[in-house]
Length: 297
Image (tube, rainbow, N blue to C red; front, side, top):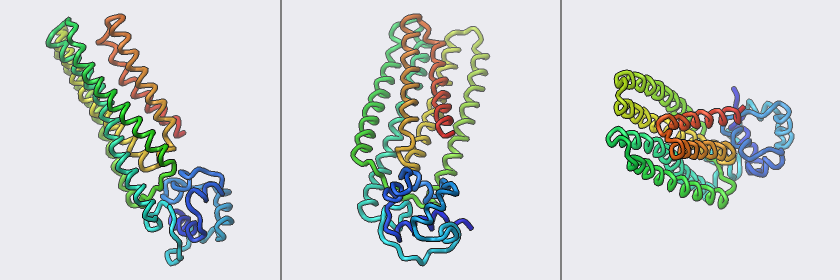
């Protein structure tokens, strides 16, 4: 039976190491140590030998023996029973902050797509009228507010608290992984069903331009819920893993979606291509997913 995550945490605290000090001694990141102790990753064989030497134990003690009776001191480990009051308070503040940040970012992305749906709905009602752009800008303004406020708040929190103690228990991590898989599966299924609905409604509308606009508007509205769910799940995953692991990915995703917005506005205002240009947003979402997958590789 593999007891490595639990034994590493106990042996580390028994030796008087924090996650940060052990990471420095091993030449790895604190997030790597946190993942080892939460069971999300395993170190390489050479690293296991170095860990055993550093902690003064055998490989068998580190990976297989039951060390539940080993006395340990307080620390900042990934297992909740070793956390001090300050670590617990910081951990709870981090959880509250990340939940709010995830809702704000997911809401912002959903608002951008919902704004496009509102634009097309206004076009279906008013036809060629300059006022149809107003609903989109209303939604876009709200989304930008969430992006700016949420992004600045998030950056400020991470700068004020560069080291976040991750106190998740293995049970909490397993439960989140199940919710994550379920949410992603439902989101993908929702997008496929949404595409099928778009094809059907566009076929029913035929050459009716207003009907086709309503079809695309409904498609974008459903898509906003699916994409918002993906963003929310991604940020919840960041919450579980630690913020330092995904900052570069988030930065690239932000650049991609901002570029998509700029392309959409340029195509609309300069060449009056509002209707076909909306495709840049789902393409941008796909590119964000590719960036995340490549970074994990």
